[in-house]
Length: 370
Image (cartoon, rainbow, N blue to C red; front, side, top):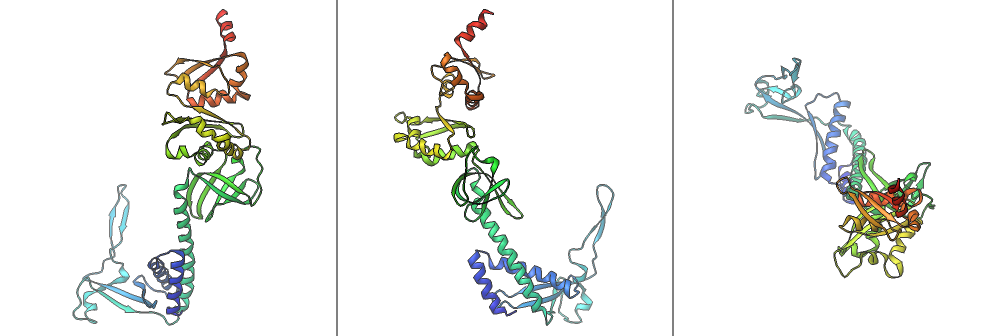
């Protein structure tokens, strides 16, 4: 292996991939030391040094001068088992002071004797190891860079491209990595095409031995939340705030908002001029209905707003501790308040955190006469 050519190639690759040259060389030294011990029957008292400037490789055999051989000590653990504690310096790397002074009369206890023992054909072994280490470290660095880029993206929305699919999942190209979008996390009824752009909500970003695991969703309530933040500047600058989002994917979402500026209507800000803002959100949700709910600190008023699209709703708090409420509606608003398969009242209950019961005045009177 030509040392100069190797160092030039190493500098080029590490600079291109953003990897520390010393990090790679340290790994190579460890790998070459292990390879030497395996291929040349060495004991443990060897180390490999790579010159950081020239790239020259040397195998060094070393001994530490001691006054007496130390092969470790024995002790007992809490259960009475004999445990052997290895010596600070491996036995193979120890040399007695008397023997060491035959080579150097001035040597002292604790000094180290080193000797180069590089085999003639070690360059062949080094070339193979260098390739393996470089490949491994580049792969590790790329995974680390990808993880660093996506580490803070959990809970965020990203634009990607549908790259692949299998029986259970879509795979979304997010730039340096691919996210997994389970088909079960698609909005019910939506149809997508390979190669098309798609917005996804990142539900999980986790580091694994094979690189980052990025799980995506379009059903998560956070997807609706991020859509609103994308389309409505007032949510970003804090003029209005999003109190809560609840969702039955593909059917209906309820979004509670309030304003920090008495001159700004939070509902109007979300709708936008000619309905453009809410229109863009609805396009992304594949026909899913969205109820904009004005948040109120008064639970009666908040529940009344949350039962939209039902109108003329009167709310009584039955038990503020257990958070139980009764909503009284007219006959023509009963079905709207309850919703298809109870979806509206369920979402309103989740949004307000109150157990809501809906009745008409007629139903209440009938119950009172029983």
